[in-house]
Length: 268
Image (cartoon, rainbow, N blue to C red):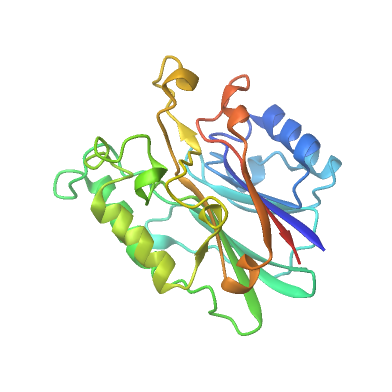
């Protein structure tokens, strides 16, 4: 059975709903996980998604900020979970359970804090919040539930590897690629027995980016990207991965997000 899971920081779902509809019509993933939806649950534009066949929608929204949503063509079980990481009331996590190819799969959708501009928690509380959030993620294990496979996706706001940024040397003191962040995220992955699917078929030194700053006058010419968006899985699903697509072209769409969709294709 083919299965496709997409992740995309949409940077306001209501503002960019035409892009979401275009993406779903053209690429037709089975499940799409959105981050930074920037709306409450009752404001989420569900109707046009259901018209496209995505009848199963779970949200963890928040007024004006953050927020994640998972929309699916496959039935979602009544086992959704919304965790309040760091206990500050932010809507940054949602997990759902679905069945595919004879497997039961828990799918985590994350929006990790960006962390501000100064990589020093003593002067920048946002950076401290990010580090604490990543520390809490270390408790999440890919094999935590007997008989349940796992997928973790989202905007994790960290480019962990040297070849996940346009210049490793120049970004070592820039939030998203500082050693304390990258080491923390790698610890989440290795300690939780997660497999980095994007690097399974595209290992270093191949460069992979999913985000290009709005500040660049010509983002295509500069191509100063970072891999901030991720798809991980438990080992059993990693062995059934067919390919991962990064839709770089989406960064050039009209009124785009600064992130682009990433799609993992499996054959279960």
